[in-house]
Amino acid sequence: MTSVFGLSGCALLCLAVIASSLRLDRRGIRVRYAILAAGAILLFVPLGGLPVVAYVRGVTGDLSAATLALAAGAVCSRVTGRTAFVPRDTTALLVAVAAAALFLYPFALGWTPFDPYALGYGSIVFLTGLLVATLAAWRAGLKLVVLVVVAGGLAYLAGAYESRNLWDYLIDPLAAIYALVRLATGFVRRGAKLAA
Image (cartoon, rainbow, N blue to C red; front, side, top):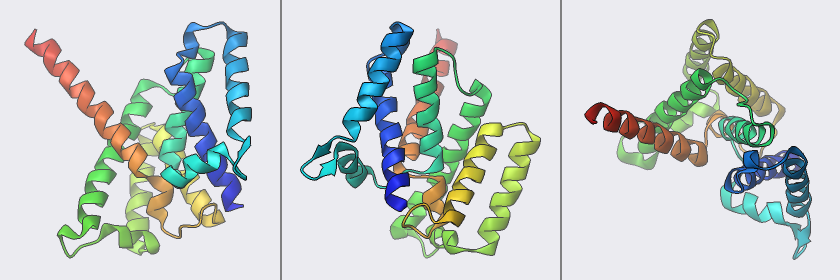
């Protein structure tokens, strides 16, 4: 079961990369779907005894709900030509992922005696904080943030991946890097506009 979820998630990420790099939104609708279908089939073709997507999973590991949501949004927007999520929701998710990454990764490297990664093993403080943050996002109408937390929580409860740490279901390095780069790029663009 963990392999099915892991491979499917990596396939979605690969399709997002394919859809974005080929700029599918600039092609006819039938061509978009044909390229996406061909890409999906090729990802599961065995190569050396394993499907191609298994090699991707070997590099990336299991992907978090945040990465899957961003990948699904990219595929949807490139194929349909419409954004899957309103910009406000996407920005809120990027800010939440960036904040979580800045909280999690530097401390998890052992720079301090506090290890926030250990909180993901069932800390009531972490679960309470996550619940409060999710309720605040729901109250603010940030549906994508709520969706990511709920999907990550349900996947965690179902044991969809091998990890037993809730952090791994909510955030991963790919989502963290993407969020930080995208937000930094946005700040630089705004700064350039103000300077002009």
